[in-house]
Length: 139
Image (cartoon, rainbow, N blue to C red; front, side, top):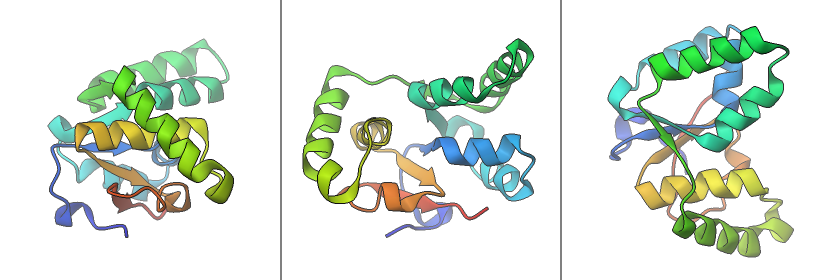
C-alpha cells in the first residue's frame, strides 16, 4: 500500500519516469511533489534517464534534461549485478501474472537494494512487489 512521503522512513526516494514526464509537461503537482523531497534524498534510475532521453525530440531537450538532472537529483542509481538478479526474480514471479515489465522490475529492484522508497503515479506496476515502499503521486 502506498504512503505519503512524510510517512516513509527511507534514506531516499526514487522518482519513477511518469512523475518526471508530468513535471516536464508543466504539471504543477509534479513540481510540488518533487519539491517536498529534500534534494539530498532525491534519486532516479539510469533507466529513467534513458526513457526520458527516448522521449526527447531534439538535442536541446536532451541538454535541458541533463541540466535538470544535474541540478535537481542528488543520485543516479545504476543497476548492479545483485539488482539485476533481484529484477530477474521479480520478473519470474510477476511478469506473467501481473504484467511486470523489464524496466519497472529493475527500478523496483533498485529501490529494494538501496532501501529507498519509490514514488510513482503508476502504482499498479509496483503494488505486487513485496517489501517495496511506495509513495503515490496523483497528477
